Every structure is written in structure tokens, then in C-alpha cells.
Image 1 (cartoon, rainbow, N blue to C red):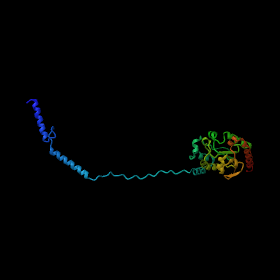
Image 2 (cartoon, rainbow, N blue to C red):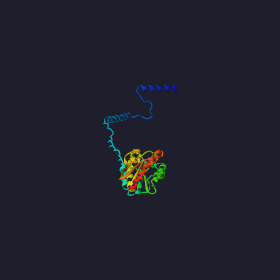
Image 3 (cartoon, helix red, strand yellow):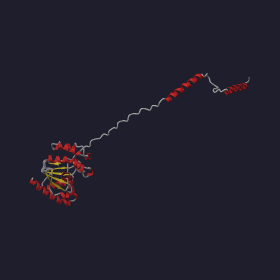
Image 4 (cartoon, one colour):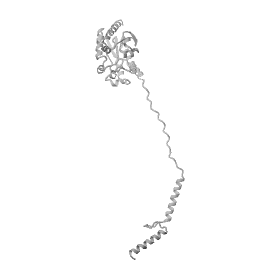
Length: 270
């Protein structure tokens, strides 16, 4: 039989098998149809069992207990100042307590603590407002132009910071841009000022400017208060115009001179 005859014989055999329902005409190994049917039946049974089983939901975690916020107790700066000041038994101890006082933010912008100048125990104590640039640099109160004028004023009534006068401020640190201290800052530092007066033991006080009047006397309006004796810390107190004010208002120096004469007369009787 030639090759063409073999082709048509093979093609006829293939067509006959297709008509009989053969689905796989080529396979290198025999297939056990009985085993295949059993395997398919087992798989169907497992699938049915899985479908019938109840669906288990994943176990939910219990909600976490709420965490209470951390609440920091507010610090009473005035009470802290009162406690620190009360522990000081001399001026050196008071200076150390003020230098260690962390609750006044003014200290963070200042170069150093400006504590006092003059003679402790002197009969006259002057209380100013707060340090300026020169005071912050040198660490002493009243050393700039206002301080130079103050020295002249004291000399006019035969007094000097090196002999018989003691000087300090309400606020020991320079405020930014020389702004006025706030009410909170004054209240915070007042316990130290009160203790300062007790330890310095003066016989009379001069409060210069509105800030000092507010701290010591609880009043403002220096042009109205000046020249009139008041009482605070169990001592006579004279409100006066601040030397810095007098530098800008020289016509007011006559009022300062009248106040100085009154102070000299009062000190002569003490």
C-alpha cells in the first residue's frame, strides 16, 4: 500500500472512533477509568462535607481597656517661691534660692541674676523695677544712665550706695526688650522681695516707679502717689519717680528733689 492509501485508511479509522464517542485519541499510557471515577467521587464527598460544616468566625479580641491620660499637677509658682524664700536665713542663702528658682521664664532670656548692690543693713533700701541691658550685663541694679542719676540724687542728700544705702529690684532678671513685668511675674517674685527686706533690715524704703509701687503697695499711679509716705513690710515707704522717667521728663526733677528732702528728714528721726 502506498503512502496515500495508508493516510486514508488511518483517517477512516479515526473518524470511526470519533463517531463512537472517543474523546482522547492520543495517550501514551493507559487510563484506569474506574480508579478515576472513584477519586472524583471521594473529592465530591469531601467538598460536600466542608460545605455542610458550620462556618467559624475568627475569635475577636477583647477591646483594650482605655488608657487614662497622664495629668501633671500644676505647679503653684507663688507657693514654691514662698517655700524657697522662707528657707533662706541670710542674704547669701536668699541669692542662692533665687538663682535656683526655675519657675520664672524671665531667667531663660537673661544673662544672669541681678540680686542687689550697696550695703546690707543700711538704714535706706531702694527698690526698683527690673534690670535693664546694663544691669543684665554687669549683674548689679541701677548701673546704666538711670543708675548714674540715682547716685547723683543720693549724693544730694549726703548718701551713697557704698556707705549707707542698699539697692535691689522687684524682678531680678531682665525682661525681654525691657518690657514691663507681668502681674504673674511680680506675684511670683514677691515672696523673695519680702524676705529680702526682712534680711536686709532697713529702716525705710523707697519704691521707684509703678512696678515697684504695685509690688510693695499694691497700687499704681506714681505721679499721684509720689511724695506721700505709706506703710508696707512694717516700714515707712516713700514712692518716687523712677530715674529713667526723670531722664525723659527733666522738668519733674523738682518733684524728686522735694521727695529726697522728705526722705532725709524722715531718716533723721529713725
